[in-house]
Amino acid sequence: AQAPVNVTVTGAAGQIGYALLFRIASGQLLGADTPVKLRLLEIPPAVKAAEGTAMELDDCAFPLLQGIDIFDDARQAFDGTNVALLVGARPRSKGMERGDLLEANGGIFKPQGEAINAGAADDIRVLVVGNPANTNALIAQAHAPDVPAERFTAMTRLDHNRALTQLAQKLGVSITDIKKLTIWGNHSATQYPDIFHAEVNGTSGAAAVNDDAWLRDDFIPTVAKRGAAIIEARGASSAASAANAAIDHVYDWVNGTPEGDWTSAAIPSDGSYGVPEGLISSFPVVSRNGSWEIVQGLEIDAFSRKRIDASVQELSEERDTVRKLGLI
Ligand code: NAX
Image 1 (cartoon, rainbow, N blue to C red):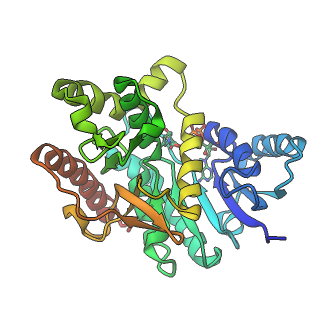
Image 2: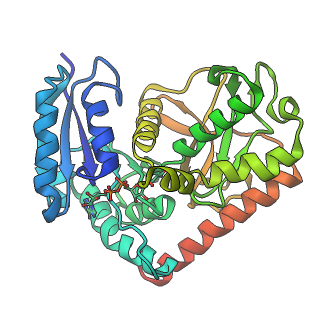
């Protein structure tokens, strides 16, 4: 029998955690043949709630779930772990400036990076979900010098999935008719969902839409501001859809992306497409042999260039801020 894979989830008692843990335990994160052990990390006041979730996980009698451990100490939570889902983060409170937010999150992601460096398994893969996700990933990575940099990624798969559905609904096609959509840049309102390289039943996405006003004034802002629209409607931020995207990201990373398609993930830039090296920015990516690769050779027109550059500029500014704060 296969040895269990250790999966650490931070913020396990939060709303994304609640939507995520059951899907991991049921085999959807890694595959239906892979047993898992869960390691939950929470802050002390939320440990009891995490214990409650663990009781419910027990009560599902998942055949693949081989154990659950709960910690309030990062060193212990990441010890021997193979997959780390960094969900817990410090939310922006009223009156908080971006610098304050980055600093507060530095207090979480710096020690977690150190703990991953100290004790995670050699094949550790990290997905940061907690916002500001790209820069939190950069902070964690900076404190894990012994882990290959490309093992630190941030989530833009929810944005990717949102864009897929918006485009499918506009064209009256199904999700499976659309390939090669891309989210570029930061997981923030500046992100750029790109349909110019997308294929809809074999023709270009932009040509299939043939409606520049919709693209510019409807599609792009709808995808970029979808998180706020969910809060407005639901009275709480996206949780099940965020958990679903985290499942998709890790599943594809481990098992590979389908031939003839790609997806979106924020990974460390190698300088491709003019994105400064080292920034953790969203790209069109495929996963081969357990590693993400940036899709190369796409033509970027002026419309796309402007939007990619604006989002990447924001990431550069975030990196400058955390540098000044001594967080990287
Ligand atoms: P919740 O506030 O429900 O849960 C967060 C949990 O993290 C809490 O239980 C809290 O106790 C815990 N936590 C805080 N500090 C911690 C630490 N140092 N170690 C371990 N646990 C810690 O938030 P939830 O709705 O679950 O969202 C979690 C994060 O995901 C937020 O930062 C949110 O902004 C982010 N999101 C990211 C998305 C993405 O696409 N990348 C989309 C969804 C979501 O908005």
